[in-house]
Image 1 (cartoon, helix red, strand yellow):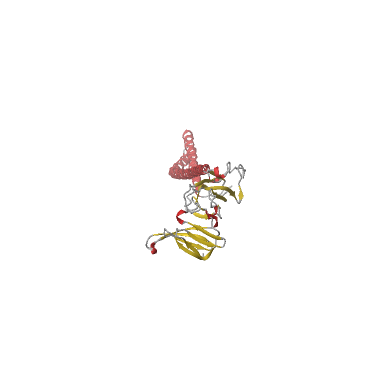
Image 2: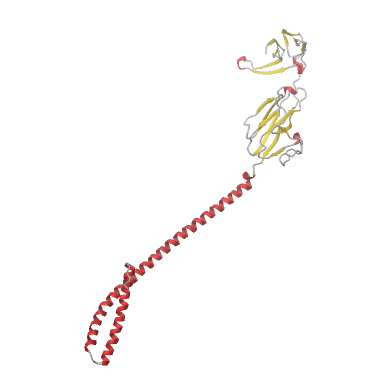
Amino acid sequence: HIIASIQLDNADDLWVSTRNGLSNIQIEGNDFSNASFNFTTYSKSDGLQGNEFNISSGFKTSKGELLFGGLNGFNLFNPSKIIENSQVTKAILTDFLLENKKVSVNETIGQHVILKKTLPFTSSIELKYKQNAFSILFSSNNYIHPNKVQFRYQLSKVNPTWVETNAFNRVATYTNLDPGEYVFRIMASNGNGVWNGPETSLKITITPPFYATFIAFVFYFILAFLAIQLFFRSATKRIQLRLSRAQEKVEHQRLLDLDVMKTKFFTNVSHEFRTPLTLILSPIEQLLAKNTNEETHHQLKIVNRNAKKLLNLVNQLLDLRKLEVQPISLNI
């Protein structure tokens, strides 16, 4: 700003006229280097003749009044009689926009009614998971200096600190929000920058898709539990089957070994029988050739026939053993 004039009032506060309004500077502290400064700027909307003042047009009267001249006249006032604006200003939510389209009361969007009442009388809003891009328009109940009202807003889980804006940018926009519960909070200051109004809040719930709901996760848990149970049952059956097959192989091998032992035993016994039978048959045949007694000859024939039959059985046992060890060709 270009300073046109500077005047000191009776309270030792500075009044500075510029080309863009009149500013009051309150200095707190005796040490100028560590002092704090409070600025209050007045414009045409506060009753000034205009926002632009003339160079060196400031004057202080004997009554403590200050006079500043501008392009459209002059302003004469007593600083001690200026009353600070203590009006309580409240932020008001005016409109709700979904994808840059205003949502009306009882309007069905995606088979779902978002606003059942006007936004100032709505405490909570429920959105689908695809409706995660929206804007909130707001205003205030300050009609004295509406252009000087300041706003600060915050959306939980999104804005870690307050976002400040002015009366010329009264919209908060959010996009690509995750499903969950959010709280939009907003405050407004009066024309003098005093934040003395109550806080306005709006609860916004974005519902998750079906596959991400609590019921879906319970279903996933049950499905995973059944899959694990099925896997363990299948694995147990495979292990039992392998054990059963292994036992069958062991039993089969045991039976084979037992069969081999039996065959060896019969073979050995057959060999033991064959030699005595051969030795028995030879003397009997000699006795048959020499003995002329009919009764004795008949008895010897019986002994000889049974001995040969027994020898034939022993030979068959030996042939069976040979078949198990090696093939035997058929002689016709």
